Image (cartoon, rainbow, N blue to C red):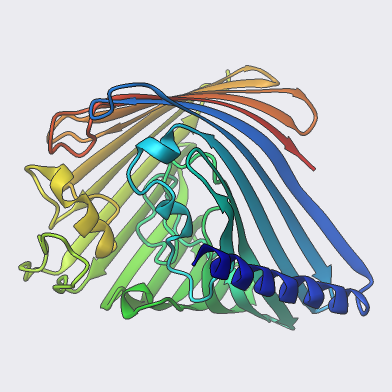
Length: 395
């Protein structure tokens, strides 16, 4: 099965490379970019008797072909080589790589052994066409909606995860997107994402305009088998950034994927709200806080419902979630950030300090520590700690 999967991936990759070469015959410009990085990681959790250490070499190549003044083709390929103890000792570790909701399979393991893997994925491949005030993009692309920086509930296609710091590009969607720019401060954005099942299907239209020095967004669509309507905004209050998002969904449906079907008995319309504030002082000290509310969120044994919450599109199974951040530029080349994810109901939390230093142009050294603290069935459990050291060179 692994050989067949690799053969299928190579066939697909050969097709895309051949397409690039063919297009290159007719293009006047091609751009290359990407990065190469090494990541050392160490894990220790309550349910694991020992520290687990891993070494990852992660490289990425981005290619953009300018076929004409109005047509471009973009492609991104990432390659991960991982050697360490997590592969063998964490159950279903490798499944997180090959398991995705893409419509087309464009990834494969070059090898998958007891303590090392090599995984290659085409996570970007789309054609972009522009005509006057319209833009059409078709293929595997990143669609980023929403205005909040931690919990962007109106991003129906790929909401962020602040703990996934090593995948800055974020997952893409196999989608069709049409944007109509009415003016410099208003547009209509329509997108449809396709997946392997109806639970992965999303289609929505978003309207953007600017009033009173605020950016406003309104959307209506169909997400994970449910109709949704929402709004978001971004602006300032007394020089402090003020962002927010509101999303309304029909009551959750019972699905085969939900382990406990813990939300299927809800008769209420689901209402999710995020408010975000941030401020930068004159000495570069930065403060940021967010709060998220889910009216159907749980108030007891929250950790038990995390998977079910994800399956219906909730970013947390909890009724209330809090985030705090303080950042400071120690020098022009060094920055320190300290972040906290906090559940005020069960008082579980995640501490997330980051130090980033740039000793050379295009070279970044990052130290990350993540500490989880919570009891059994709390949102952030089991208690444990993670440490990362990363060297990243961009080109």
